[in-house]
Image (cartoon, rainbow, N blue to C red; front, side, top):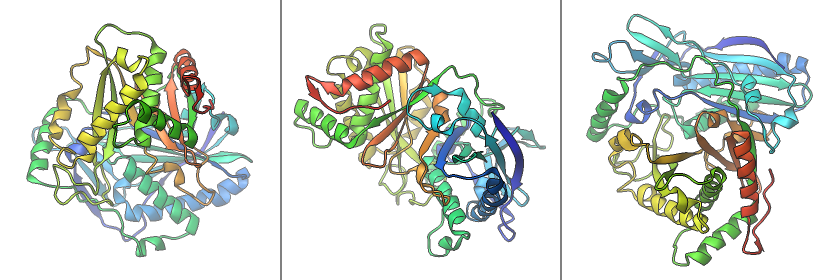
Length: 461
């Protein structure tokens, strides 16, 4: 249903640095052995195949080359040493390195793909570039960090697919790169960088971070470096989007404040994460006595006072800089009658204690190495992806903001939720689950917005 027209290699323009070497920090090394992140942006844009191939694709190639001048690491590679006792991994760009851009035309139904109702997950993998094979040189295994795909749906729209290694950078950095590429494509040049502070690549460094870097490497080097060689199919999952409207969020906040009037802060993240978490847990049914549910909330540490770096990491740092918090609760409590309120309160406590408190943010990051080792009592782990503060779909290539954004990597986690702005003050929640589980979750999600006879809003699946 999707035909690849070409796969080309895009270099930065002439005149850029001949080489850039960046060591990996503990932030980066924690992602060395994870699967790539696959992201899709769908744009409404009426376009013929001829216009796409003769006008739009050449502009995308030119703008991609220009933006690489300012983001050289995107064209680089991770070098993983064959002799892990003698060397450490680095990110390297050298003259001649390029990034892959695949061009394709699809016969899939664009409107079906961007709908909210449950759709088969496997069909979306036609729209992301396949993993680039790992190669070896004398001393290193070499893995590219980014690749892209532009897919036309004739007369209907365009999809920009991204495949990136989390080892290079986190969500905020990726969004910054995509917005920069899109802005250059829309304007036709990179003049915006003449008046704007560009990205910073130098790794944040303190005596404490160097110590933790060594601890992380001592653990990560024990694991074979084998990036994914193929896309994860079949997934046997469906994807669906759920809308929490602004009125829904306001009423859910009121529900918490009614039950816990002493709370001093009830955030949108807090209520949305709690609502999805409790609906997901309830959709599975009961578990063994004492088993725990875990919610992981990542948090960008740039520009925030923290326990590791003083001054804080600059907001324009390109790389990984994530703290976060784990919320743990017994499964029976999350699924209980007042599970939503209890979960929201627990989430709020963790955000306040581990993220908003600068003395705790990034404190003892080496503890991450052992946090998930004891899993025998953990029933389910839900990971929050994305951030309404850093919107991937705001990357405007000249076709407006994206109609829909998806992270296909939700299929890889046991459970994951993607939060993004709905455009009218609400949130869109994307989920990937087995079909029967999705049906149960959707029913509970909808029913839960009607509580104690009061209508709290209506979800659209």
